[in-house]
Length: 503
Image (cartoon, helix red, strand yellow):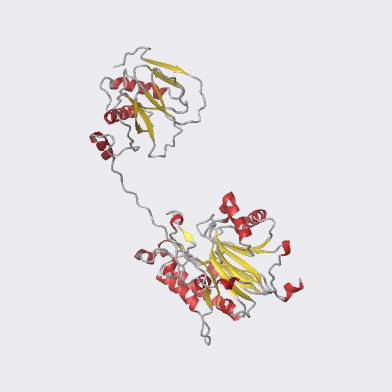
């Protein structure tokens, strides 16, 4: 049955739009001027204010109820929650809701018999904990807060609470503990340079997609800060995810970012799968401020050569210099469900050891750097005690043992291993030092990570000072952001070559 009303009870009119930056709730009654924002205004509820003025407040959730049925259901629920006076008839409330729903694009209801609460749709609708103020005429009523939307149990608590000040039980939140980072250089004097030595800094960084990385100003700022602060001579990227057609674009972009420094570069891209794998090595070539570029007496670059299958995935670039050979590698991940575990352990790792042995027998210092996708020791990941980690890529017993074989590799007549994990050699007791954190789980803030990025060097670089190069330090630069991996830095001291002295 239609509701009879008088214009004095409820007036409908339009007003021009007025800009308001505030999203605060507006409460209107007969004596107040009405000036709510006009963009998508929605009715919230009606209160037992008839015919008394507003004297106190309480809160209720913001909701969108555009249909008449939705308004009716919400009003019924609201009346039970806040104890609406029976003097306000439900059909009267529905009529007002209908008017508001149909005229929310610009019309406003000016009620003279009750108070109406408005709210702007500027509140994010994705939020589930926002509240707005609701008016009440009961001076003794104390404000309370209700969650949006309230659960059935919470509504029962709200109606049964005798004292409005009694706290509503909440689920206790649990926070993950942070893992402290502990690393101390046992030999600070190692960093001292000889009179004829110069420092060379190599950076390895898995940037998880170079094109996306270069599109973010905050990431490019981090890269430039890294190059300048760490005095970088060589930088190795892994997981660039580029195609052949992207190389020129990324090279030009890097040159713009790194001005005034100039870098020569070599790229390996995946030809078997788009947007997958890929590595790049950049070496500084400018002579500004007296800088002397590193030289090569023979073939400077080589792409691939470790394994035929991995060569099609763009997983390695070899840089051949006078003082050492640097191998930038992105070792295959065993993948979800460990689908590539057998290939990774029994094929790729084996061929990598053969390749490294070949370089070793050429009589040059060798440095293997990059994302090796394995956490070798228990101290290289945050939760070694969890059984499930034995079935996770990078922490399976097979992968860890395979990496151990590389570090134990030695000649038939030699008594010491050929290769050394530079960081673990310098910091044997370090804990909580990781290079990868899951972004999906938000683990970086808690330092719950894994050490997957390494520099594996010839043992002579740590013990023999007659080889023309030696290791000064190896550190994890986890203060640089932009990827789910942190950069790793290897610092060398090298003696000048005759060609460099001539220059």
